[in-house]
Length: 363
Image (tube, rainbow, N blue to C red):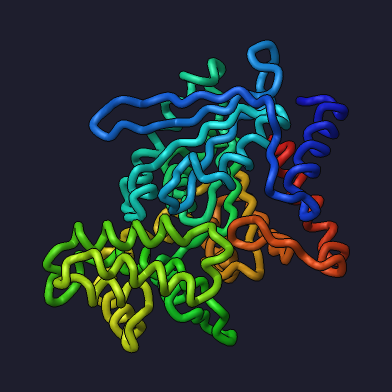
């Protein structure tokens, strides 16, 4: 058990850097880190963040990060900042790069890759303690799949931030902002190429050059994601058309469908989702939920425009053998970067304090 002083110091650190009042332009300095490689048929790069005071101090906990779907992997500045904050609070942080997620092509193999990192954790933590899993967005598939495999004693805690249970449900949300039972919501249009990428091999007729169109969509994502200026439609259209002029004519129409620059892109996309239903079902977290038996905290922003917050309840309802708590909040959006109004912050202060305490002192 950690002393009350140590717990309070960890909470103060996390609150300083992750509270809704914190800016995101800076991150804690002085954190030692290095990249390690797990060799094998599918090498896995793991970024290791050492707690402040390393190697003299014993890490308070071991965090294993289940990353979201992002081309930058551990180099994503938002994830890097989050890991630095946890390390500043005294935790050892392991942040693997799951290749399929970095390629923007999720497959069930991410569970196997994530399990390999879990099994290798003694390489960085000599005590081989059960880690705290922190899952970001689509990383819920890898983290829930792992939790189901390793049983009650394999994890200290599972924290799901913006996760999902049903893959097909979030695809419809990404494409049309649709959630049963509520008014369609403004969606994030920059995400739709990834939906098309998931089903490029389910087209009828088949795509004549899958690699060319996948490369074009990846370039579009790299040039638009995380850039505030791309919220302006004319800017992302400019980028999209520039790329279109450089790709083979045989896949140009499909590429334009994928970035929403054709009149019939949505009906076309929904047909792709239906044709790829079997592939999509393999990416559901639903089959693993009943085998999760650890302490679980599900955090979700009610203004999430990538994965609807209703998925938090889907996850909780399926974890019938776990100790589950759901935390819905208006303080954070999908990327964790929302700046709420003062009234919202005051109204949700109790939720905010619970979330920060969980992150600071997960064990």
